Image (cartoon, rainbow, N blue to C red; front, side, top):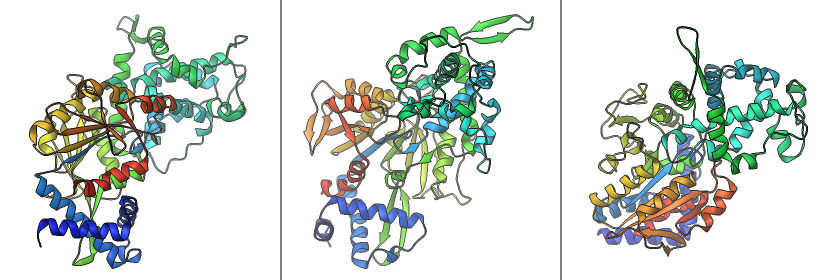
Length: 491
């Protein structure tokens, strides 16, 4: 049967039974759930529906072959977009703050917090039960509420989470200054962002009449200035061989301790993957001749943008927790993370459909189609995320000559705004309800998305993104429709 006829047949089957992309999207999600739970697809789907799913899978292959390669590429950040990491990253920030400023232990004791509870080894132990968690729950909740400004950004330090360590110091100092007057507050935010009455030693601090801890909104609005003041007010204290104390800039030490802390988490579950991740990262394929022969493959048109190279091992180990085994290849010559695994199973295969490739922005284009790409920023040059995206976009344009769509889905509004200058001076066009940028002298369409479901996207950032003519707000349902709808759009 001719290629065009087979495509037409599959599209017709899709239209007559599923009535559009939404139904196909739902079926795809159900397939992922079934495959992940090792259940047989025939328990839920009848033969005609499986036939359609298989035809669509073959249509994708046929279209890509006909067009000369992969024509749709997805670039996604991990934190907030595909995984809920705010709480675990907040915990690590407190661990680092205690190393940079050991005197914080006295602050914690005055607030009724056992500082020994912030042990990274205990946190990674799945069977460990922390009886002190209630005493510092308010701290982690307040840190998580501010993750949009402290856990991400465009530069490497911001993506590593250095800012959050400064935020830890501010919150503990503010709460100590309050002297327990805000403890046990009720209301929507009071109970979340202040210690409970039973967990804090009231009256230990030196309360000032009329003072109170800064609210989340006040910290958010004034963060740039507060961070700089904190950096100057609380130096790193180093004692030399003569016993003389020197006051040093704390940022280099925060960076060093944060790298060490993140590297230690590669044996633990750093990422709390959302159910959405299964649909975005994996593709279900089946053979018409065997309805029980379905299998899951990693998508080969998807790139995950890592915030820092030390996050590589923790990301790979977290991917393995999704329930599948895969091979790992790396283009990194001197990886900062020496715990990088080469495979999550014993029998590796160069031609495996379950392959993760760790690469750089300069090599990503040549690796496209070989597996799921983890793109690591160049730490030596201080490569930003917007620089990474720019290099990937233009590298892909130069390496292919077919019509293309590049979707950039990032939970940092700053990164998306930094991408606007290299997209050209022409205003985006409105196509199928989306604001798309057509690159000059190219058929490539670049679409910038801010995921509205991400836990590290502030409501004001959503409003800003909605008003920006270069950006698009994206819901989970729209993302799944984008992934599945490419088949019918290309046809």
